Length: 215
Length: 215
DNA sequence: GTCTATAGCCAGATAGAC
DNA sequence: GTCTATCTGGCTATAGAC
Image (cartoon, rainbow over the protein chains, first blue to last red):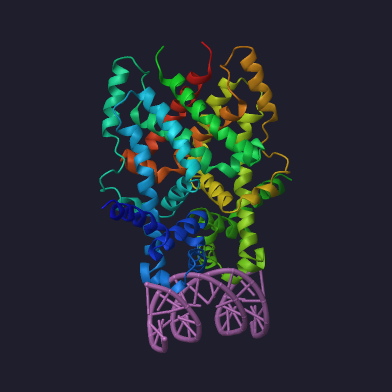
C-alpha cells in the first residue's frame, strides 16, 4: 500500500523529468524564454531535450503551439504571485511586505520569466485575451475596495488603487526586466547585482510604505 | 544670404524626410521597434521606406548594421533623459519632479523606444558595452555624491543612490514597457490608459518624494 | 543610385522506415 | 514512439542591367 503510494509520487516527479513530453516542454521553456518566439530554433529545443526535431512536431504539432504551451505555463506561475497583492485578506502594508519578499525570491528562481511574458505580450497584445477568462486571472475588484476603505479610515494616504498597483509592480518587476541596462549604469558585476536585488526585499517595501502610510 | 541660410535649414529638415538614407532609417526604426531584430523583415522595411530591398544593402550593407544604426539612434535619444536625473545641478526633489513629467511626455512621443532598448539588451547584453565609452553615457558618479550630501544634511531620508535611481527608473519606465499587461489587469481601453499615464506625471513624483523627503 | 532577378541558405514541417 | 531523409517556403544578400 505504502509502496504504491510512494511509487505514485515518484512517478509524478518523473513525469516532468523523464517523459518525453515533459523534457520537450522544459527545453522549450529555456530556449523560448532566452530567445523569444522569433529567435528560438526548433533544432536547439530538440538538442536540449536530447531528442529529434520530428518529435517536437509529433507532440506539439507546430512551433506556435509549443510556444503557447510554454507561455501559458509561465503565466500560470506568475498569476498567483500577483494575486497575493490583489486578493489576500491582510492589510495593505503587510501585503506589500510579503509580496515584495516573495516576488523577489520568485524571480531569482525564474529569472527570464517576467521579461518573457512582457516581451511576448508586446509582440502580440491580443494573446493575453485568451487567458483573461480563466479562473485565477488577476482581477483588481477586491483590491479597489480595500484601498478605498484604508484611505477612508486614514490608514493610508489618498491614492488610486490602479496607481498603487502599478507602482508595486513597477518597483518589483522592473529591476529584473531591465537587468542589463541597470548593470551597466550601476557598473556592477553579477555578484554585486544579486546583492542589490537581495537588499531590495527590504528596500522596496520600506519605500512603498513610507510613501503611502499615514503617520 | 538669407535665402542660402533658409535653404540650409530646409535641407536639414529634408535630410530625414527625403534622403533615401533617412527614409530607410525611419522605416527601419518603426519595424525594428515593433518587431525586434529577429522578427523584423528587410522586405517590410523596404516597403515602408517606399524603395527596393536591394537599396537597404546598398546603404547599410547588412540587416545587422542597419539594426545597429537604429539601436544607437534610439539609445542616443534615451541617454539625455536619464542624464537629467544624474547630472543636473538642482535638488533631488526638483529633479524628480522635472524628470517624471519630461520622461512621460518623452515616452508618449516615442512609445516603443524603452521596450525596444530593454528587449534587445536582453537578447544581447554585450551590445551595450560598445556604447559605454561614449561621452554622454549615463554615469552615477555625481548622483552618488549628491545623494550622500542630501542624506547627510537631512534633506532626504537615508537611501542608497543605486536603489533610489532604480526606483525612479522603475516607476517611470515600467508602465510603458508592461503596457499590455497593465491594460488587461486594470481592464481599460486605450483612452483610459493614456489618462492613467497622464495622471502619473504628478502621481509618480509625489510617490517618490513622500517616500524620501524628511519632514 | 535604383531597379529586377536570383543565388544560397536555413528553418519549419512532413513522409515513411523501424 | 522514435528516428533519418527530404520537401517547401521564406529570408538575407548579391549580381548585373539601366
